[in-house]
Image (cartoon, rainbow, N blue to C red; front, side, top):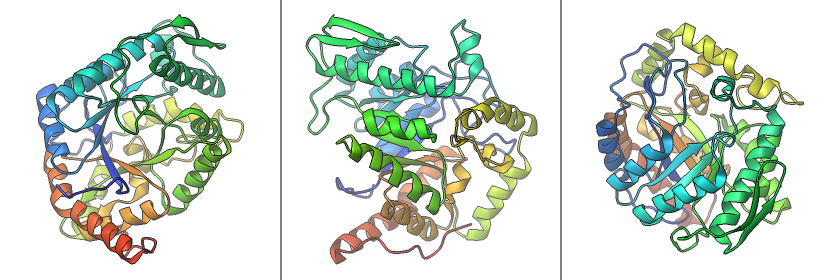
Length: 378
């Protein structure tokens, strides 16, 4: 495991707690959605430089993910199986009462020694709400609800007699005990959020600790980081930025590109089209047509969070240089997916991460910004 400092780029991985892996493709994936595999993976990941893991949330079978484990219970199981890894449970406002979730996360935080976190997902899959008999809100209303949800979580975790009155949630003299673990430089369990839309960016600036972006190239990241961190500054806050990427590291660039080609060539066309139809409203329903998946191609959607767009595909050296360029542009964390998790997480830890840390150390020693990448993979 390469040593990191508080200023080092952080790494997270997508927990494969849903079947089908991280690409909607019929290519062989030596990845399993079950607990035993994921327990082994979590231990391996924290021993190979990963500080965070994100448990996915899907409530019904959909688009190449026929089976899924619930995110909060699965996250707790992974927390108990590890020593250092922080596990982020994805949750949906509208399907959770925030006071109940606040209690669950506080308990998980105590059981894990202060390593629990949440990712507030405003929702893109209409059927998950309507088939449970819950109302489906329009895009910006979902983000208004998420903002209140986050404010309620923070109020409960930090106040002795929590009070809140909003359009979606209300609290009166609510006292949660025990509060989450008192961790230095962490006032409460970390709150992540996703979303690429204008509403999502503004919300992050007002309330979130971390903002997750779908996969982006350099220019896309620069634009998003500037807007999100600018929104935070306008509210007297700071927000850290996380970027999604699907990583394919091989000994040669040709090998890595061939893996990508095969993934796309063997895409499950029906599942990808189904996913595309389900998420089309997520970006297109916004007033400015700017949001998640608003301009994603078929190839992009084979990795369902645009992970190919970040282009972490090539040799360890090419990928490491591209990673530090993302850091130079304001990325604080990379959220990674892999084809064959056990093998590739270990390969990353042994072959890619040491180069990243060397480049970071060189830049710190020289007192200069991280330089331009030597190679970009694809």
